[in-house]
Amino acid sequence: MDYIDYIFIKISLWVFTFYGCSHRDFRMFVNLPVRIDILTLLPELLNGPFAASILHRAQEKGLVEIHMHNIRDYATDKHKNVDDYQYGGGAGMVMSIEPIVTIIEKLQKERTYDEVIYMTPDGTLLEQNTCNDLSLKKNLMILCGHYKGIDERVREHFITREISIGSYVLSGGELAAAVLTDTIVRLLPGVLNDETSALTDSFQDKLLSPPVYTRPPEFRGWKVPKILLSGNFPEIEKWREKKAIERTQERRPDLFDE
Image 1: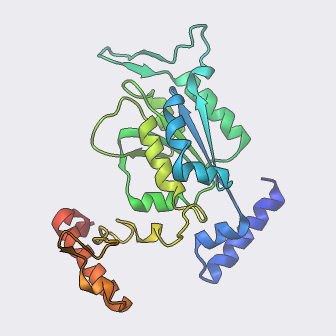
Image 2: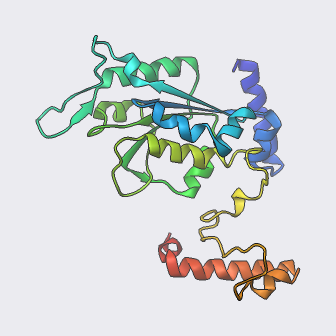
Image 3: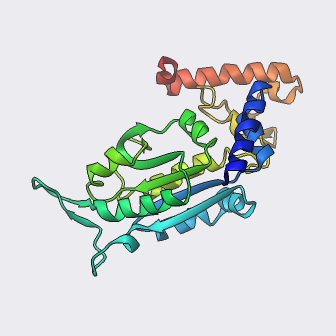
């Protein structure tokens, strides 16, 4: 992006904000594809998730660019080692600092990144608000951890956000990176056929989604609630809100405490 493009985007964003337009409207106006760079030791693990369904279509439409970088390609020794024993002793290996820093700095010379994200069990738990925020960014870098983690100096000097997808440990950060990428990409304008679908998902308004039904209206004596067949859309919305609150109170009461 050259300086003139940068000034144009900044002025356009100010105008859109002044008139109360959303960032989604702004992104549609300037036609900015999101770029996501994923740093990994096992890029083959990510080929499947990114080659089908919504993520694949989003790339085909030019709405997102997903690039995978093999950290091992940046190892300096002849054996392409990317891990070593941890100082102070203890079980497990640690991802080496040099190849990670080399690839991060190489990419940062090519573009400015809004976030450099590290997927780690001790990161901040991923929530919908985070996904919404990241979907408004232009350039994201995601680092996938392995072994006992990465050298702490990488976290101190390069990582801007640390994210966990749950209180458990995976064999590596690739699957977590795929989850994060999916949550971001599906929010981009033009990705889903129904633009409003993502805005009514669970957690968007701190509530779980209400029950949903489709045809037939009766199956084995199990009937769809009459209100949903009434055509009275204001009352249907009231019913859905009531059910969403009830379901959240029953299954995720912690959401009301946030």
